[in-house]
Image 1: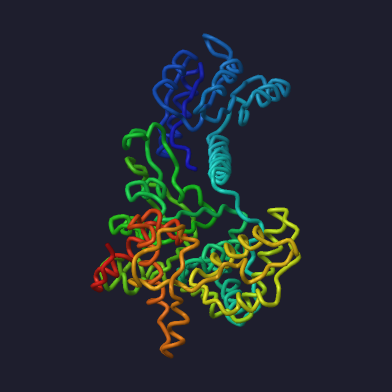
Image 2: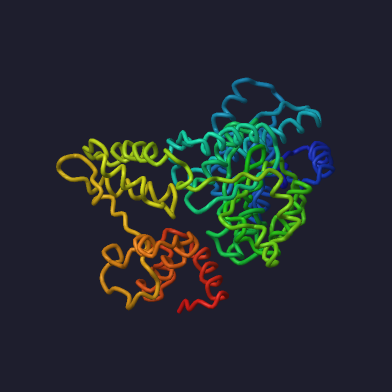
Amino acid sequence: MPVEKVIMVAQEEFLRKQVAQFLRKKRIDVAECGSIQEAHDYLGKGNFDLMLLDESLPDGSGPEFLVEVNLRPSKPMVVMMGAEGSVDTAVKCMSEGAFDYLLKPFSNEQVEIILRKTEQFAQMLNVNQFLTQQEAEDTENEILGGSPSTEQLRKLIRRVAQTDATVLIQGENGTGKELVARAMHKNSSRKDGPFIKLNCAALPENLVESELFGHEKGSFTGATNKREGRFELAHGGTIFLDEISEMSLPLQSKLLRVLQEREFERVGGNRTINVDVRVVAATNRKLEQSVEKKEFRQDLYFRLNVVPVHVPPLRDREGDIQLLSEAFTQRFIRSHGVPVKGLTPEAVIALSKHDWPGNIRELQNVIERAVILCGEDGYIHPEQLGLTAPPQAGAGDAPTGPIEEATAPSTASTAATNDAPVKLADLEKQHILATLAQCEGNRTRTAEVLDINIRTLRNKLNEYKEAGESVD
């Protein structure tokens, strides 16, 4: 995080002017104070990133004021300045919360070092704070599977990870695109840096820009303090932009600039911020089609698609279903504390025959439910998996009972009877429309049942409407 605002509290006017001049040449705002009262006034008007605080001041003690500053909800990092060179004094100041200690007289080079240390420490604090606010990540997040397509994906990850190239990950919902992005980060030279993610479809459009680039105090209603965005938090590491296809066109142009120049301004700010970040983006849509429809910028697509990575769907990963099922079973046995012995051969066959339109996420949910509902014999049977074929759309009135218990003609069996294979896209459309009917047109509830984002559902319904399908 760059140091942008410094408050200099020192009795000697010459020292204040010397340090302030050096900082202003670095485009840092400086407030000069000759007393504690002046410092109080400035702190009441706004927040500062760093305070250089003298030990001795006309109206009080610097160390005592340090204690007061550290009680503030938004506090600057404080570096004490002293002339005596007493080790005991320095240790006392550090124990009271000082970030560092400068012995007067000091040089501009020493101030430069303080700035660099402050920026690095602020970066670490902000990243840790951001990560603790997010949901706890699953520690068992390695890419499992031994199929040829999975092995090929692992090799590609290892090869691409050694570079700083921008990566575009494409694949269906639930295939594990975030898992691939994390693997790239962990195998890269940036592995000790932060991994910061943002789902571009999970936030309202007017908030995505603030989340990406941060904002200045007062830039919009509710912006009561300056806030760093995800790009600043990811400095020195990797930023993962999921569902990049849902980003608005105006924001796409700003992202393009970051990819080209590695610089941006916060919302409401005019200070250019430079970042060292690797960008990994992901989408479940074919961006080429979005470019043709003018929904996605062609130049941004070329910038993102430096290294394309395709994550295969689960149905194309022969042999991985059983391995993943057994791994998920053991994981949920531990997390739920259920005495399950394992899957029956019949359950394994049922899992292998399912088409898995929801991919690994669907498999994980199925196994978790089966572990919880496991019978007294300790084995998971086919009936506990709850696998049913997607219902057909327009097959009559929507059932009135719970969705989980709703019955509908099996699309798969109908296709088999007619000896005419059904396209996966048609199955998906039938399932979405039938679920929408079961939810009585409630799109929010439909998205929850389908385990997809509401914006993804809206896009799908718009596609069906353009094709002449009734979605009301």
